[in-house]
Image 1 (cartoon, one colour):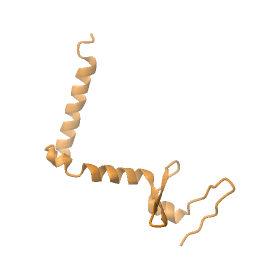
Image 2 (cartoon, helix red, strand yellow):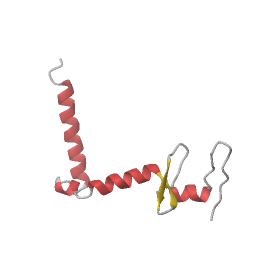
Image 3 (tube, one colour):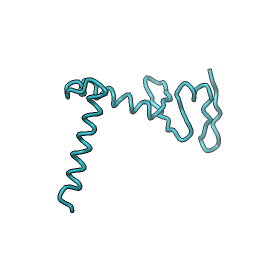
Image 4 (cartoon, one colour):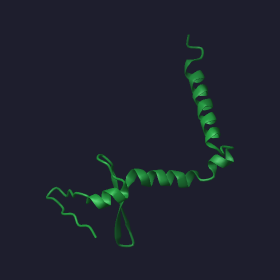
Length: 91
């Protein structure tokens, strides 16, 4: 168990063991989640990424993106399309 003291401004220093477990770096944001009377501290970026992954689960496969090569090809196609939309005909 790790302890932290709350300053007069409501600030705390997250113990190093917890920072390592949450993979927190300077400037990262942390998320406080209350659930069933408990408060959990989470790495906000990691939590957001996991939520995006959860929401997108299966969408890539449905779009025919089954490999890294498929994804790279798709990204390149989108970039080319956007370039044409922006610059084509603006000579």
